[in-house]
Length: 298
Image (cartoon, rainbow, N blue to C red; front, side, top):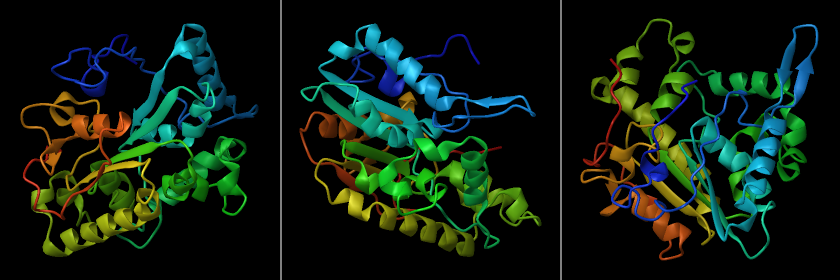
């Protein structure tokens, strides 16, 4: 874990790079517990301790004591596993502050779908099942979900987002490159390597593969439908092969950053946070967006 990381994108302290949040107190909470700060179990025989939830509480307690309790506005954001953490801990984070404090949450690249992989299996669900059971996550999942669904389902944001009370913004690539590689077409689900080139470079996908990826995008749009009905929530689903767009300067706010309807991600998030506009930006399907910064893996 690096001793120092550059603060770019939503974490930048430069007004030209981060127009709405540059002069905020910005904190990066390093993460290594493996369950988006929700685990709380131990296996004495194996000498394993999972303490993500306690680490979360300790970090929040520390920040509150350092002055965060006096904040007039706060935003919990994160990317990938941190984006999932922003969903899982959103209402909990809200609860730390007095009612008069403006508190919202942003999940970037955290909309992990309970999707069927290319072999017809459930790669991500099986993986999440292991995480939830190994780390004793169930106790720390929202009761409003676990009272009618199994714990693993409640680790998927699609089963949580509609019941989160705090305003939440979902920023996600419709063709999330991490999910394509790790959930939809991982090597175990594609032993012949039929998908290998496509997962590394979208330009090499066959028309049948593109069709499969369009179905994944359709699933994502279905998942956010109820969530999007609430005016307090925000949405930016761009038709890119990307993952994590808020902490990279080139995708957050730059001369050629991705846009939907001429609006860059930084402006969309700022408009939503400060209630300047209702933001429900959903891109047309691939390959219509020419502003994407698509990830190509060598």
